[in-house]
Image: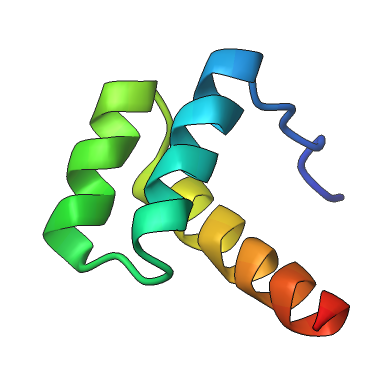
Length: 60
């Protein structure tokens, strides 16, 4: 059985988007810091960045 899909709050998405604009890739410490800041797991942040990079690449 799969885990239910996690929906990010508007504030979380805003901050993730803001960080993504400045930097397409995060280091592990940066990811951990951002995750704790947004009350997410580092893995959720990592996957969000992966998906966002893929979407940007697909649009280009």
